[in-house]
Image (cartoon, rainbow, N blue to C red; front, side):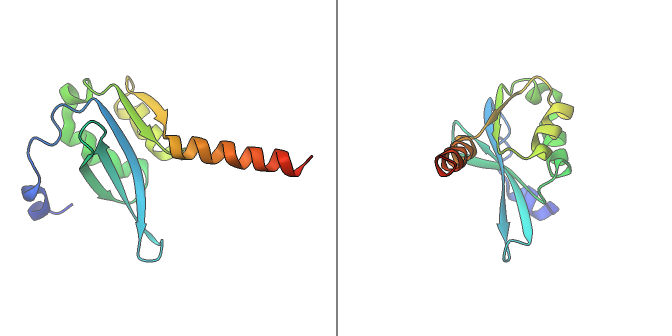
Length: 118
């Protein structure tokens, strides 16, 4: 994120984060990714960065600082290992929760395979 973009952000956006969501979105025909962090209580995006790796969350944790990291109780994310790795390293006390979309998708796929095998 460049400096002019950072200056336009609400300086209080990282305050009072208790439950958040982390996910990536693709753009430009699915070849580029943005990692987004959402405050689940307000529904607002509080952070965004290029990429979809654990490293894409480094600046987020740096901006938060230890005091605000300690206030986060839970984070929802997909099944990919990158975001969970970042939280285990930078915020080990945060409860990692799988987002409902991916859990239901896995269950539906498993049920479909089971039905087809009968």
